[in-house]
Image 1 (spheres, rainbow, N blue to C red):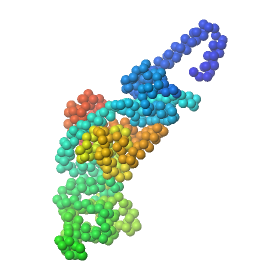
Image 2: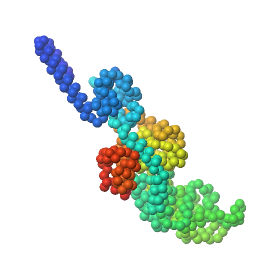
Image 3: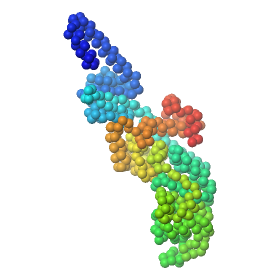
Length: 500
């Protein structure tokens, strides 16, 4: 009631008879009851579980959704201290600390998972209570667990399927369906059947050798795939390692001589990783080999080779050419087709798939039974920038699997640097208007995207037979229908997913 209305009421009380005061009180009581009824109906129509507390932590609001979520009737909890029923509450923290929390993951009681929004209630600048709205994601978390368990049960079958598919498409070993990855695979598949030189550009750990190996296998060349890291060979040994040598060609030379990398790659593919680290004098000799397809062993005869060269680097070769550190003619010889490979932070939408496959692989490798990944741990993996790219992600996953004592990977299993990032993210979530990943998606959005992709793939695998799909996913058919409707998945969309 506003100040003017209150003053008017006082004036009427001072000038009214007892009968008028009685009627006035009845009108006020009826108005309050009507407002309370409207307030309760408003709360009950919401999909979120709403809780309102006063300054003494007593519950003053508790809607029907909250009753269903926690099994506590409003008549039982309203007027009671909330600490009598729950502990470590976001709504209490929001009120006592004056914080604004948006879509923070929370586990208020065993077996229940929610995304919570909470903020203090202020009156004339003073905090007089708190309010929270919680969205139940328990079903999503349980579905994720069921999908993980189903994935573990058919892991061996998937591995066999992957082997069969690999014979038809060598690029199935490259995981991810982000636009940047799909474009890189498209170009690599087109260029594989030719003999032109290829330059792979990307950060360390972005999968350059994986792409080079796939290109070689898809090329049909009958020789070996020989990979060398130009930065790992001392300059003094580079020539003998690349070209090989004949017996007795120099002091300490093996009596039988040695085949160099070039001869080992005859009729196959030579992968020159970190080509920017190759010594300048060796660049001249490599250029001659590429031009003439012939070289001399150290202290030996001339040898003809048929090789296809794939080079890779994370360095700025154009800047090195300008500084005179890399030969321009060799650059153009190697750089016939360039394939840029995206960093992991540029393709965050691929992280859930990479995580799922990585957990399956390392669980099988180390004899573990990892059933699922805690949503908070997945949020930490999505928020991290991964300077070491996919290699760093897989190293982190292997560590988590090895050190996990149970069947669930939790934030406690995260490496120290990721755990620190996760803690900083949680602290920031309490003070920022939105708690979202660096992709711009909330945890709910990311989880829904994972569900949509997995369900679409399983439907495609069983030729869109919903009964078989539900069995493979380990869920009732009714749940599958509900998920398909909720996630807007239909047969046409699933067909598109299977063909992508």
